[in-house]
Image (cartoon, rainbow, N blue to C red; front, top):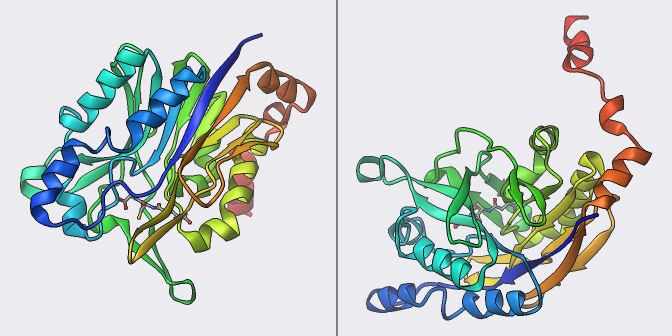
Length: 296
Ligand SMILES: O=C(O)CNC(=O)[C@H](CS)NC(=O)CCC(=O)C(=O)O
């Protein structure tokens, strides 16, 4: 039996609209002013892996701001986090990094990238969000067009072996596409991760139901670090970073008020016993079975 511990971090705003000359200063302190103490505390409490939400680096108040603050994987932000991981000997899931695209100089487009860093500070995996949140809900005051600045990721990445188990990578809106979670499960994931910045309206209606459904269907742990609180006058996030076990039970919830963390035990025996007792993956019909409907 293998037991490990991990932490989910929620965070509020890291960077809002600041006067231009202050932005550079704030940027250099981006981590030290906000997340470093959380990660240190997590390690102090025994975490072997720490999960930070989507847009843990910043949430811009305009497309221009979001783009101008973006960096590449070799920039300061990632290098600070890899130093921290190495110093604390902790694994990190950096849930959504604003990564300059490969043709940044010509197209000024970014990826929304989920990065796994190991306890030696090395980048182990990079998954680029594949479903972009272009959604208008007029009655609920939601209007976001992620594709205006983001390139959809080209592919899924194989689950990553970590000290807490095999971790499958998704980001936020990807949560709504169960075929993605099943694909990761089929490739051996024990744990699915959906670092997020859910809107308040969609979060209140769907967040917990979706996360628990993904856990129940795949019989995986689901870990979802989440942004919480008000980022700027146009944007707030629902919060409730959640950890769910393979039976669908909520193991931890960071609440919807303020930044915080929750420590959860990942006992992989729960994955095997849940799958042994109710072997839904063995009962699954193949794709031909469903295509029979299209042929009829
Ligand atoms: O904008 C950034 O800087 C970082 N990206 C995000 O916050 C993304 C795209 S706008 N947010 C979501 O996908 C919310 C999904 C959601 O709320 C739902 O599925 O209901």
